[in-house]
Amino acid sequence: MTVKKSRWLISLTAVALAASACGGGGGGGSKSKVFTFANTEPEHLIPGNTNDSYGLNVDSALFDTLMTLDANGKPVPQEAASVDSSDQKVWTIKIKPGLTFHNGEPVTAQSYADAWNHTANGANGWGNNYYFSAIDGYADLNPDKGKPKVDTLKGLKVVDPQTLQVTLSQPFSQFPYILSFLGTAPMPKAAFGDLKAYEEKPIGNGPFMMDGAWEHNRQIKTKKFAGYKGPRPAKADGVVFKTYASRDAAYTDLRAGRVDFDTQIPAAQVPQAKRLLGKRYLSVPSGTMDFLEFPLYDDRFANADLRKAISMAIDRQSIVNAVFNGAYKPTGSLLAPIVPGYRADACGQACTYNPTAAKQLFDKAGGFKGTLHLMFSNADPTYEQWMTDVANQLKQNLGITDITFDKIQASDYISKLVDHKATGPYRSNWTMDYPSPEDYLTPRCAKPTRSGYDGAACETLIMKGNGASTPEEGRKYYQQAEDLVLKDMPITPLWNWQDQAGYSGHIGDVHVDPYVQTLVHLDQVTVK
Image (cartoon, rainbow, N blue to C red):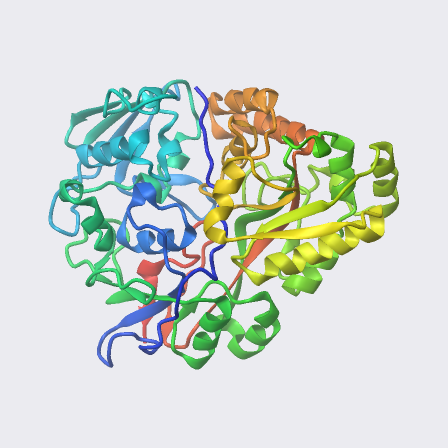
């Protein structure tokens, strides 16, 4: 069975309605050791339905998962005592005893089974449904037509309160990585009586708990969970996630000491941030990638030589310098550099700026007739900035004179891509769920693909990698799959994000980690 994925995170920094104007760096009075975190209004907070980065920021404080990632990006136990398999297909998960939710309810194997069954049920429409598609019985919960006739995954078996047995439909060596993703966090029985009410004040199992209900478009307040018995007890009394309408507004408050941690300093402000913040400015390697993707269901883009010509006509370095102040890194890979198996020049000449060769290939492909539409969302002003540079380069290097922009509302953008309604090459983005090549490659190849690419051959290689006895052994198959996608070029890599972060003098013990959702270990932060 195919492991289907469709989470193409679009940075929604401009979506929130208003920035919180109240509160200082501490956010909770002179004696309260609370710090503030600049965020954008989340879409959801229920783990199984949260796949925007802003909701995941909050969930990283509220929830623990079975596994986490160490400093090298390898999965290690968090709530699990052990995760074992002899064949990569049947996995036995032992859960540490004595763990509780914020309401005192024990965290058990049933807590995970309940959350996973609800998320995997297609009738519920939760965003992280596909993370459970490797588990036996997923197809029954997601029929092609009609509602599912069952409500549990066949492959989940609660052996005893601390033991969960998971049977996959086929071997999958990357399964422990999936268990580190926040979308797989457990839920208490108390959640299922009224899920709408639960989302307004989630009951988690992490080091912080909700301090009041979600104050939409303003803030989400959390406090230390006094009964926490997990592996990452909080040092601060709480974290307040302040909602901002833009990166610029958040950075202004960081400079003024009205917010303590900002993970999205605008690229235009990076030189100033380096100067003003000194050692409190952080440039952190990121798993996030930007691409230009082609709608292959549009016959005008059916020729691979045309797609390669467009790729070769783009001067990635000049765009990175002009739009991002050199903060991002041009790339020739579908994978981020922090992912094991990354190869810096996997794309080769097809992703190397060469206007002369690009024009020759363009002419060989028959050129392009009519209006070239470049499509992107209105979520961030930098999208239009770099698309403008791309348009100018295509005009100059390929002679395409009729180019127009289709700027789409952020709330409608993903649905248009899913429905194959892209009007031309479009901005595509991927934020790493876990550091495995499989996480980046499956969305390119597994049906249905956003681009309309027939990735059957690529998918076969991915499945061989999934079935390998170890992640290391699987990498050779993933690399072959990447080579195949880059040869066909349904999508061309542009650049790898580098997270530009900074923090106030109000906090200390800021331990940065590119494999942590929030870039910093929230539990370790101290308040001065």
